Image (cartoon, helix red, strand yellow):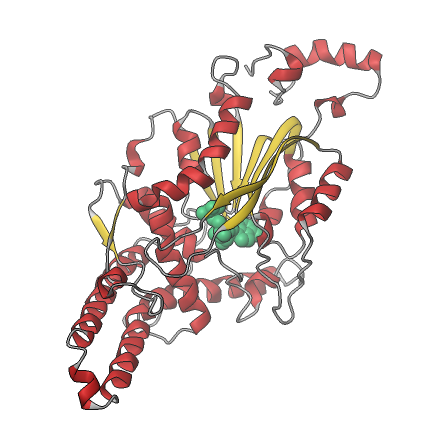
Length: 416
Ligand SMILES: C[S@@+](CC[C@H](N)C(=O)[O-])C[C@H]1O[C@@H](n2cnc3c(N)ncnc32)[C@H](O)[C@@H]1O
């Protein structure tokens, strides 16, 4: 299931920084504190799961002996869950190990005693468990069907709007805000487009850094993403079944591929007008405190003629969270705002059924009835009147930066 909350919401400071302005020093201190809080969560995982397993054991052992005798496999299954958690912890340690100095421009100092494991909140443990499931979605064969329903429509639309026989795709820039573990952005870069993923969560950033930069050997690593689910298992072994990853070598991008990941809050990082040919959002817009702020940012950063492709539900992440701004708009209302900004909606499907980090053997399964749309920021924004339009058209051919143009409206224009 998709996340319902932002990681900075508990403990307060990180997400709020956009609205509460701190001094640069205080800002840096809070960021450091947040960084270490998430590292601590990665380190605390084993203890947390073992506590759950011990509780399950205690509950089982409190049953009348005659009932226990009827269930010969329960304790061995719990022991197996424990082993799987140990294995998950090994992967999480490797992720942490590769995260401590991962940012080119920031160092977060060192912990006094890095071996000391500090307890984490249930909230952070839930985020970590969701991150483990995200490996299945993005980087395993198990996630292929889900990727086909979520990522393929976006990729196909990019290829339709910017076909390689009409555009120099190495000059078409695509931004993926809320990129998760980066697979969608990576796939777009693999097709030759300039693609940048943007992500705010350290859980995701640490993990995507690991998989993108440290995992070369196909299907060489194992995770057990479903061990945390104690309900709705048909077979005990369903809970402990593994996934292997990465299903493809993340280092196998063509040498000239232009792929990057940028850390930070989407609305803070992306402020330059008229910069992107395409912004693609997948299960992202409902992460906003104010979704209209996202629409506004996308409108601003798209080049005139650029397109916004969106697929996802509206499971608002901050709904019902104390002290957090959250405006839960219907799709109808968001659509009205999109049109009022000036976007032209060119493609719209209001019922695209997808899953999100689905456990396909669970007795409880969620289906999202997503909206999919393509909205274009009109190219005509450059021009004030007909005459200017003609003049500018000539100029633009020679000097302006490549703006995305609709092949449908602009015929055979290419980006050069
Ligand atoms: C539901 S997940 C979707 C991830 C990915 N797009 C996918 O489809 O698997 C939403 C992602 O957006 C990220 N996110 C939330 N708020 C963000 C913000 N303000 N800026 C950048 N990323 C953000 C979250 O950390 C999370 O990874």
